[in-house]
Length: 297
Image 1 (cartoon, rainbow, N blue to C red):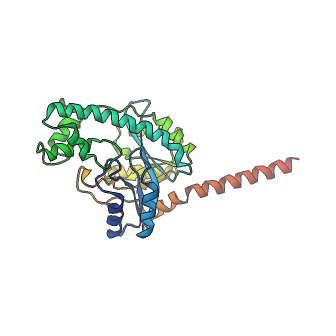
Image 2 (image 1 turned 45 degrees about the horizontal axis):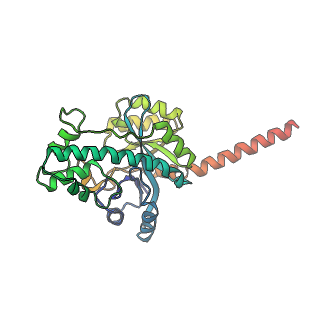
Image 3 (image 1 turned 180 degrees about the horizontal axis):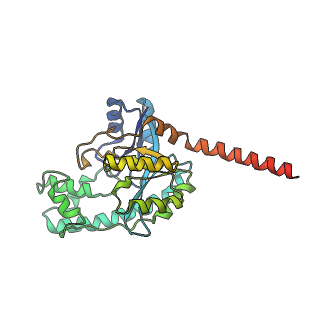
């Protein structure tokens, strides 16, 4: 049993609803998925219920945005199976507000450059808890300014290399704060798409010192060389490994469906049993300490 552990719904920056995603997973024979909406846990309970009705195991998850304290780059951390998900709500709210402020500024810039209104953009974000770049591009496509979400216009407006970009960087929480929040919530922390960061090795080293639990090894952004490198590093350092398609429906840069990238059976079992294994080790260590203390007396 493998699983696609990186899926986004219409609640954030995906184009499909929870029901449709689960139906698609079922039609493709994917037995396990994780809904990892961006800074949003609103669909977790509903997804689990709908998944159970359809024979699909839905792992609770969320993708948390952050700013690397060293480089200033945006870094995404996947959190799985938090024991106290309510403890992440403050962080989700803080990051979502930062996303909204940045998106509104980009929306205003777009409306100044093209004959398009803010209302059209907001309508394209209907059903989402926030406003994201794909919604702006969707509105431009609706108004006939481009023929696709990830067209040449997208890279002109939203690529850092473009002289004409309108990018506004959100003021997310620092990565250390995010990892601390995940730990406090009893969740499992995984660095999302590690192959995409400018100083991936340095970033991973810093995050491991902060308590990172694992890496997203299988992802569309990683070619075979990067995947093999990440796998070897994770195995050597006894880190958890996950994989996922980063599915967003039509808001994906290239054609990519659920299950295109997955967490293999062995690694999925390790993830699902991780917290139980930690509890067993803790009990074993406590028992050994108690026995040692008794012998000393």
